[in-house]
Image (cartoon, rainbow, N blue to C red; front, side):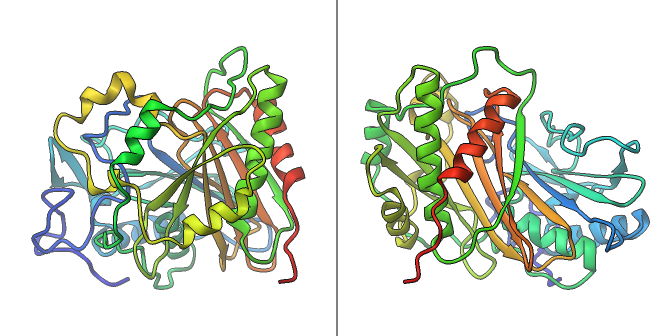
Amino acid sequence: MTSRTNDTGVPRRPDDGGGVAIRAAGPGPRHPDRRTTWLILLLARIGSQNARPPTDVLNARLAEAASTEFPLMRARLDGQQWIPASPPVVSIEESGRDPVACAPVGPLDLTSEPPLRVVGDPEGRWLLLCGHHFVFDGLGMAALLQYLLTGSASTAPDYTKRSSPRRPLTEPLRRFLAPADRVAPSPVPPPRESFAPREVAISGKNITARLASACIGAISTHNLSHRRPLKRAGLSLAVGGVDGESATYRRIDVRPGDDVAARVSDALASPAVPPELNGLPPGSFLLRPVLSRFSDTVLISNLGRLDLPLESLEFYPVARGRSAVAVGAAGLTGRPTTVTVRARDLDPHDADSFLESVIANLEPATSS
């Protein structure tokens, strides 16, 4: 891994422009949303054909990654400044427990613990990364996972790049005046977030666009079953990549009946990003009472197909906003893609049903 640190190795400020070649991958401590834990989950199921590195090797690699690509992994937040601290270490869960069921998804205190939790099982069959979105995006966590599993050099996304033009400030105003519909919550709120994975054979072009279209169909079906018809949906479309700007996204509004896939393809091809990626000004906490009016209906994030020695890879993006529903996708070379749903306000049955509807709505790739 190539070094991206300054002389101290730890940036004094998340937005330090004085030589630290790393910035926050996502929302920072000023973000007014205090209901969301901002933890991204990446679950690597090793399977019986491969062996997970021993715990001491994983800890050594975590320390190395914290000294090169991810210096914020060995820092703690003190107000708006980062101070040097120890890197994260692997914790071993008791044998036989389901990794998602035991996932440490509670709020992470950046002032007293690293921005990454790493959990494994005694048998070495899985490894779970829970990373704060302030430090990681999905592809950044995938780069770290590759290094932990293989020890091979991997380039993390360059979080210093913010070169894309911003869309006009009139768009948040329009969303404030006409909020997008939410995914109807389950009648009885679940005690914790619901997680649902499914493997699906999906190939060809425009997978993210096709997935977005399938999501709109699934939301329409789900909301009708809860007597809350979908009239207008807001889509957050994650955009990342290790060769350029990362941890950005596009936002569009669609209605049932629209050519959602075409709209999504156009949005992903546009260089313009939402204006809030300029950063949140001091006093943004005042937005908390009206924050839900700016929310999107669903977040869609596709990591693409990765070359990792795994049986399967489950990617759970951050679920936030009024709906707090996120759909993730991650494929492995020579294996199916795993599509996931993560939902704060859907019970496990509704989350499973929603995911089944998404998969049923997925259109096959065209030959063109």
